[in-house]
Every structure is written in structure tokens, then in C-alpha cells.
Image 1 (cartoon, rainbow, N blue to C red):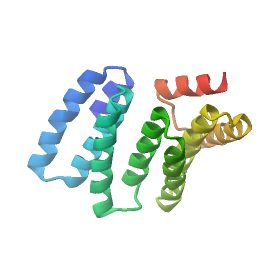
Image 2 (image 1 turned 90 degrees about the vertical axis):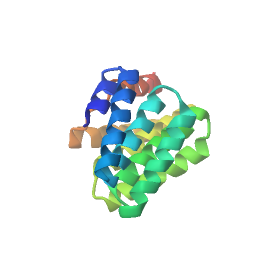
Image 3 (image 1 turned 30 degrees about the vertical axis):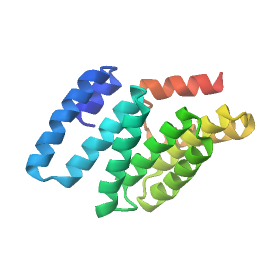
Image 4 (image 1 turned 30 degrees about the horizontal axis):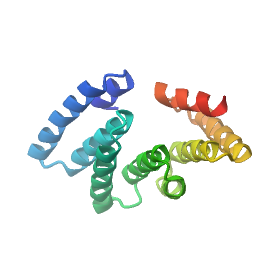
Length: 168
């Protein structure tokens, strides 16, 4: 976790963006493409949290482009795909969100990261909740929760809130 991500998890989204903006300059000076990609990805995630969906979408697509250059089926691509799914879900583009979450399942398997697969099931469960597929949603969210318990992944406070709302 980087400092910008930490600040965002603490709820200080504006400060997180400022720190990440400084990070972009540093990674550009160092010509560190991987650091640049992850910083742009994190800015997209923070923009999503700020409900700045157009910014989030653009930043996440740039990150996907950069990740695809080095590891088109790697963990960076999986995380960026996860963010796209949530942007689409929150904008009401449910079929597109499903498509990205399903893509994320494959990316998770390819990168040998079951946490990514679990988070994809979490995203799919949230989509199914919104579209009224309660039985499917419960199954997907329960599967995500089981993976979360097995892998010890920790929900960020906003994710926990979304899960509680979905199950209410």
C-alpha cells in the first residue's frame, strides 16, 4: 500500500490525490513505468471513491494501457479491470461491469492471486444485487466472503459498507 492509498482508506481523498500527483512527477523523472502505472491506477481508484467517474475511467484506462505493455495478463491489469467494473456498476452499465468482473476472474487465475478472484465475485455480487438477482447475489457474496476469510484480505471501510448495504 502506498501513502496515497493509505490516505484514501482513511477518508482523506483530496490529500490522497495531491500525494499521488506528486508521485507521478517522481516516477516520470525516474522513468519508472511500473511506478507510474500503479500511481495512475491508484489515482483512478481515488477518483472512483470521490465519485468522479469520468476521471476514474480515464485514469484507469491509462493504467490498463501501461500495464498491458509489460504484463497484459498480470496483477496490475487485474486490479485496473476491477476498478472499471465498479465504475460501470455505479454508473448503471451492469453488463459492462459483469464483463469486466468476469475478465478479472481470468486475470486472477492467470496471476495466481485468489484474492483478485474473490474481489471479482464481490463485484459481481454487488451487480446482481442491484439488478434484482438476489439468490445469485447472495451466492457470489458468500463465495467472496469465504475467499476473503481464507486469504485474510481486509475490506476497506467503504467496501464493508457496500457489502452491508447489499445484504440488508
